[in-house]
Length: 411
Image (cartoon, rainbow, N blue to C red; front, top):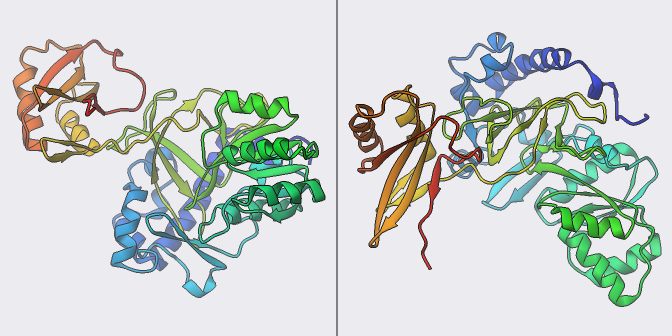
């Protein structure tokens, strides 16, 4: 298979987009016909018209934060499952609680591609140290290992000394799990004076991988690459050995949008991550994970041509309580929508003499004098609270994806 998992990874971008949207149109039609939630959400959408990203951007956003309520209202999957429950292979329970289905397709969670990029190959023995208890984390990795033909040791989490003993006996070449647990295992091995030099590669997810920790692993001869995965979608993006951003997987489409709007932002601008998949069993369309990221420019030096993202950059759900009332990013977006003269905005929540204050900072090139009372009126109408309005030069607000910034200190 060479340096790439298959030829899909090196396709021309226009070829990939055409293929994705052809498959997406069929998936949308199936979702509308078989999943009550999607029948209602996409009631005014003709799947045949969803031919490109611009058309996709006109569809509603579904937020992961809404799944708990949806599943309680219409158990077990909130009307989002497009096959009978009996057609599934497994059902998991993630924190929330949120139920996550797994279908019967090979590599359902789409992880083989990321594992291959990290150097995993057929016949490799791999210790899988993601949790096997109810949550899908371990299965997400295990299914990809199975698809590659690797041998999986179901280590799970905890029992560190036993994990070390198993590694010493079976001498796995690879580790799959969180980076922090790999560090714990290696420290325990040093304490017990056990040789784990068979470990040469690792694929980690579920946590941030700080550069300092990656260097610690490299110093012990372990090459560590990371993936961005969720319990709903499986693997969304993954590192290659070029280690320049995360490459979006071939069976999903990622959009980066302005928080609270669903409107795509320019490449390089930090925004909210939306993912659309091609899974017939459990279709997810413009599904917001609540995370922030940005598009990295150009293709990866490794030759893979799909979009790259810069990795996890914080949470997009910036809902904040002010004067005892919640203010949501969607409300800030609505204020800005009513004033197109404002290019970007950020609501800063502060405190003075124990009282909460709101100030909407606006980027605009227009004379701001006449705008102040108009925007203040809109801000009060939308949030039901009074706030101040300030103006800053275009391009001066930080590129960090924040539309609400809480600078109060509650020490």
